[in-house]
Length: 362
Image (tube, rainbow, N blue to C red; front, top):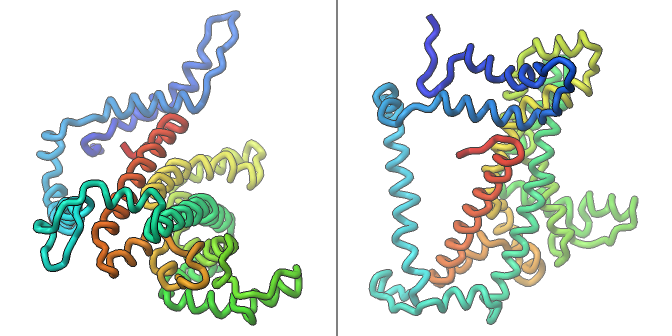
């Protein structure tokens, strides 16, 4: 007898529900034409019915899986101590003129002055914050597009390799840059993109690009080079999840498609990509929530106030700089802004995914 986990639907019922979308559209009255039914709409309807059938009350689930809940307790304690309690204690700092010798609770309140200083653009701090916000959205947007698509494409390409040893070598070599320290990555970037660097000279000789130090150039080209090296460092490691998801797709689907005459491109487009689409959407939603974390270590190491501050400074590096300078009120407002906007973006992305593809985190 096969046991199903609490909260999961019976396999027979699940199979019947998944197939019902196509079967119901095929059964029409004699002499009438079948109404066009959207495949996406049918899938969403069947998934909703599966979730309704598989719903289990929390108390019942706790009685069945109490061991798992107990294992989660240390993680919950860690989250409360190092994430939520610091947030609770730091929020008052956003409304105070913090003094070191007075502490958090004895420092005088200053209302919304920290917010005005940060968002109005007045003064050095405000203008720096607005530039950091622009750079963060620019680099984060490139990460959500180019930086997110490349690992998916690499996983699809790797899945097409038939020679297993060559496939493993390619995967292993693609993972290696992820384990290189950020300090080393920054040094490599500086050596390659310096005025006399290899990449600078190559682009100068081939395309007539200016012979300049690209990392010290105060232009948006800095964002392109930054994303290029970010993708090179993380595309292999980021593809692990997709390669694993592709390996779980049933081989029967590929065999049936091959019998019907489908080529490898058609199988990748019609079977592989739809099979990993829920995983792609889920990871994309998680990436939206951390869009402001655009490689703080690299931007902090590359930042130079006299050369590339207008394109390199991000909200993370700005917040760290304000903290080290003793402006804890300004730093708290910046952190609070990042948390609120990141949460809103994640909720918005989750809503779009649920409406368009029927896949969501909650």
